[in-house]
Image 1 (cartoon, rainbow, N blue to C red):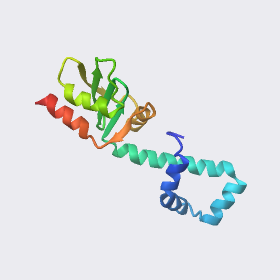
Image 2: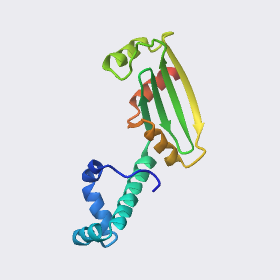
Image 3: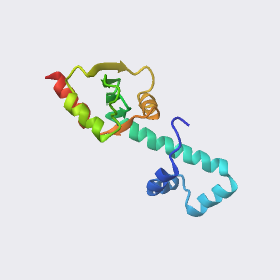
Image 4: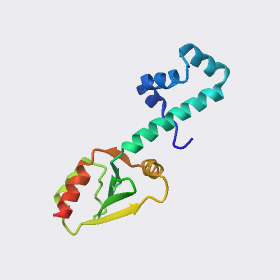
Length: 157
C-alpha cells in the first residue's frame, strides 16, 4: 500500500465509487459479500488498492495545503516539481493560531515585529504525491489557497 487506507467514514462517503471500482473487476454485491466472508485477505487488498487510487487522484489535484499549530502557520503552494512555502510564526508565546482570537490577532499584527515570516521553496526529492501525503500525515490539510494567495500578494507587492 502506497498511502493509507481510507477510514470507514470515507468509504461510506465513496460507496458509489467503490461499487464502480468493484464492477470494473466484475465483482457485484453477491461476489463481494462472498469474498469478504471466504477470502478476507483479498477483500483487504481490494480496500487498499481502492484507497491508493483515491489518494493518488486527490494528491495529483492538490494545489494548496495548510498546517496550523499554536504558534505557527505553514502555507504551501504545490507545483509539479516543487512546493513553495510561507511560514508565519508568532513571537508572542501566548498567541494560539488554533483559535478564532489567535487568527484575529494574526490579522491585526501580520506586519509587525511580533510575526516572523519565512518564504521557502523545496524541490521534490521523491514522488510529488508521496511528499504531499507526508505533509498531510504531519497535520496539513487541503486548502483552496485563499490564505496563501492573500499573504503572498501582500509579500510580493
